[in-house]
Amino acid sequence: MEPPTSTAPKKLKIRAYDCALSARKMREKLDKLVATAPVFNESWATGDLYMSARIGGMQQYGDILVQHVSQRPRNELTIEYRAGDEALVEAIAQGLAKDLTPKEPRLVPGKKRPVGLAFFFEMIQASPLRRQVLIADAVIEEAHEVAFDDYREIRSKLEFLSMVPRLSVLQRSLDERVQKDYQEATRVHAKPRYCLFQGKKIALRHRVKVISDLRDEHLGLHFAKISDNQILVGWVQPLASWDVGWGNSKGR
Image (tube, one colour):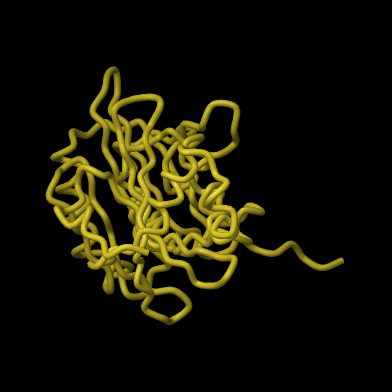
């Protein structure tokens, strides 16, 4: 019998704690730890707000996102990270140990998946949909801090995008709503985002909006057609943060 394989190093993981520290005090301790602990010699902490810090590093498998939520009776601290960076996260847990009480992370109702957009996109990466819709790692890294939780609407939009390469021959017979969505998805934007994928710089010349049915929130997906039957989603962000060039296109 072969021994069980270890968790893939890029697998997303999460830790949750009750936290006795204020956001400011937590951030002060975290910054000091990252600046002085040998395990963080090639890492750095960024973020202008006390309640959220992103730890990056040339030797890391991905960013480590530390988020503090002030609430009663105890504050909450969550750490989202890649499995290969477990040693760094354990150093954080040990450095703040006297102020942290481990607890179970919140899960999506009815699912075994932790709450959060990053975990949703990781699930898509491993789903059958990946045969038509590829999700770049950059999407997951950016999604850590995007507060959009209408996963049903995102999946519906991704499933539509999976059909776009085949809809061109049916365009004239599509109903008005589907034609509108098709035109949005095939519009070519003159100032695209770029992402790295399999060592290549890919121009994400297409964009679509996802409109939440749960609250007044919009999400933007930037993507590229990389083959006759595959697209690559390479960037995600709240629509409100897009620059004025959002509508700048040059037709199909």
